[in-house]
Image (cartoon, rainbow, N blue to C red; front, top):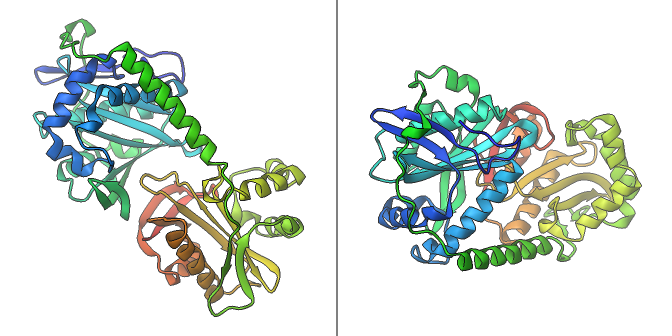
Length: 427
């Protein structure tokens, strides 16, 4: 295994290792892989497209030189940043698939893994060997402590692979991914170093690099196409960044059957109540920061930062922050934000002061928030991660219509607390 500078995985090769009479390795993608990539993906469309992200483009339009160039550019950038490894699977020097992992939560060293393989090599154990190679690197070298794998329940080969490696089922997430042209349920499985260690898996047998056949290096992408893909990528990235700062309309939601309550956007006059509430309910809001950092976040600058982000609604870097007011008192909060979990477009975090809002009122206010999310924001799914010992919040989300989908073991939830969390979903 050759390794670049710490953090930079853009030149990292894993292997080669022997697998039967073949030699397997993982390496970063190359522009010269285009012809093999396209040929396999078009031929195996029936096996890949049902589980691939939905796109308005046809399958052929998604496999042009420009799309491969863009994929390589994004992969190289992410690998240089150190939060993703995008590997090409080579068997005897030939491109046969791809596998990758993302560091989705650096604080808890949690990654997400996924991949695909040429149908001619499916079911022959290559993907499992690649999985061992990649997990060994993630656990032993990158310090990852937990890897998640989202898989469609009807993708039987992928389910067999992750189960064979020792992944344990965590939850079944309703409509978690828009794949194959429609929203689809996905199972979520997890593996830790301890899980991998107890599996009776074949040992990795190193092979000499000079034994790897050359394979094919024809059918690359022209410099002009790469330049065009790079320009379009920069334009898209800039546009997406600017979209986070498009002002949103203030929110004011009526809570059914509770005329004394309202859910609304944070406003300038909330400053004192915001700090008092954060102080009184600090352990319910966050356990991930120390006293000094917490104090810094709740000084004047922290308040104006929170108020500034409120202007941009759901697309802001911190998501949508709404306040529950009961009898003109700051009684709780709701936050909708981009989730770290695979497939979760939007996550929910909420808390309420039991002296100001009982569970019935809190649940009614949550229903108003979710209805607004689905009807006005166009959300498809909202998920909440709640510690198993927080039975009150669990009862509130259940009363609001959320369904318990599973248990995320030793999970770092939205407060930063490491414990088992129930995953609740609403679609």
